Length: 90
Image 1 (cartoon, helix red, strand yellow):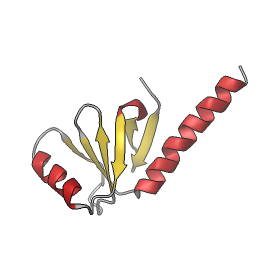
Image 2 (tube, one colour; image 1 turned 30 degrees about the horizontal axis):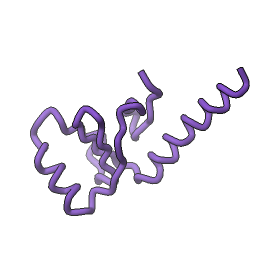
Image 3 (cartoon, helix red, strand yellow; image 1 turned 135 degrees about the horizontal axis):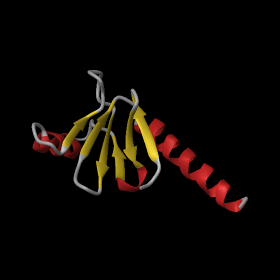
């Protein structure tokens, strides 16, 4: 299992399963979310707040997050930068 990325409010996603982190404002993304709404493929991790990012996974899940895509991308980069530094020192 890969590293877990915090997507807000204590919710985490396996970093190895993330394909993309996108803004929910684009029409194609809105259609993707609408097409899986009401199914088990949509995971709402917003805790009732406005959706600011949609995380697409390799298993065809969509995870809704209240964090900005840039924030999630930064957390993703921090996890892998830390991992790379750890490998260099061993």
